[in-house]
Image 1 (cartoon, helix red, strand yellow):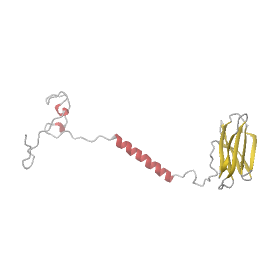
Image 2 (cartoon, one colour):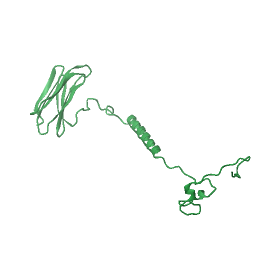
Image 3 (cartoon, rainbow, N blue to C red):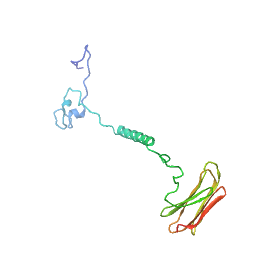
Image 4 (spheres, rainbow, N blue to C red):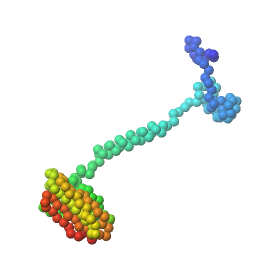
Length: 184
C-alpha cells in the first residue's frame, strides 16, 4: 500500500488504476500514441470532463415547449365560434356558396367546388327535434339523401358533379323547397 501524503489520520488510499487514454494508444507511458492534456499527468485524478449535451433532454424540452405553446394558442386565439361569427354563418360543406333557397321553416343551401356539389337543409328555429330531409341528385345519377329527426340541420350530402347539373330538395317539418336542375 502506498500512503497518500494528503490522507488524514494515517488512512491510506489504494493506487488508482490507469486507463488506456492515460497510458497512450500504444499501451506504454512513454509512447506518444495519444495526446495528453494537462489533467492527464500521472498522479492526477484524470482529465476535467464537461458533460456532453443530452439529446433526450433537449427532445423532451422541445416537446414540452410545443405543448405549452399549443395550449397558450388555444386560450389566446379566437376559435371558429367566437369573434362575432355566428354559428349559422359557418358551413359544414366545402366550397363556395352556389345557391340558397328559403322556405317557411328553413333554408336549402348548395355549395360548389370544381368537382363536387354539397347540400344542407338548415332550420330557421333550431332547438327541437323535428323531421328534416335533404336530397341532392346529379343528372344521370342516384340521389344522395339524408332524412330523419334533427334539431338544427339535415346533411350535408355531397355528390360528384363535374360538368353535370344537379337537383336538390330540402324540407323541415312538412314544409320545403326544391331547385330543379341547376348549376349546369
